[in-house]
Length: 262
Image (tube, rainbow, N blue to C red; front, side, top):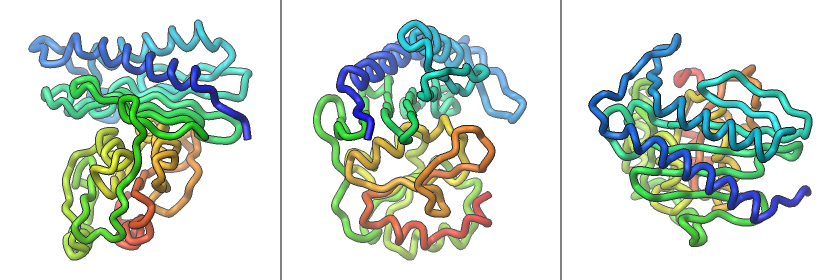
């Protein structure tokens, strides 16, 4: 297995935090200037500035690496490594002044997920991990919860618009508390033991790229709704994300039928 250095993880964390500081310049600003992309999702100057900053930094530091991001075209590389950027995960929250948005950065190599960072600039929290080095929450080791069942636990999601009524009823019947503390924040809650599960039934690769290494290094489990453990980076396959403390993972997957979540 290819080793990932602490220096590389520290670099990724520093860059993501710096991108987060950029976004705070626009947070709560009345003249934010919201546009809508072809798919109807919002984009702001903060999204574009944060991604441009990260791309410039990565190009200077790792010129042979490929880069995938939400707001700009992909950049090809020759190293076999790919950085994946979501400059603001939770732009709708950001535009409404809700402090639960995040900046996401991930690195993949020929072995899969290598580095992942979830930065929550408005909360001053960062959760990050590297393959073989562990998961950390602002410098302290991060671990998932040890709750053995959903009963009494917390399940997070980004929204309920794609949920069928029977899925909501299934979660209620499980005894879990369902909350829309979603996007990157929900995954951070799972990695730090503050929630048992996070479910995003329809996502792009940049929405969840950091999550497999973060959740696994925290002792949990990450898959798609179908139970697949590997993510495709080229957008050819519809993606979803389920993160749990591991102990409740099969129970969570059993609550949902993928055909009703698409």
